[in-house]
Length: 176
Image (cartoon, rainbow, N blue to C red; front, side, top):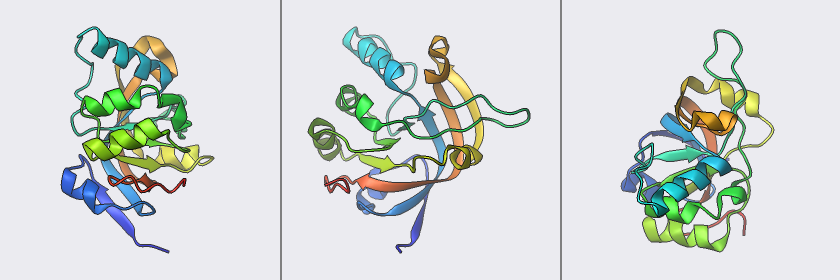
């Protein structure tokens, strides 16, 4: 078993380029949630020359639609969504500065090429352990697209969020 790498967010190019497909990582810092509807809307904003509600430069998006929190907790269960649902939008958002994505499952070739071209990274989260992932969230707030409900964009502060490097900045891909 490989050593667990502790990563403090935000990511920089040195950290990204130092990670390889198969590395086990614990992320601590700020990540944003966003799923299909939020991605579609952000791409529409870009196409229409509107400013995005978050600055994507150097940021991480976790493909998740969290459950409501229990009283006294910042968030409920927060498991990964199938990443291929965002494949139509990811290259454009990577072009806009997004450096890392967290989801589950394989990505299409256009996403892999965008990751390589812009030195990004794709982390796989473990499906089926949404309650455990929720325990890694120390604070959560909706910051954009509140009308999308669970698909709104949220800012999460996470501590030791467990992920695996699925596609590294060189395009090495655990799914192939």
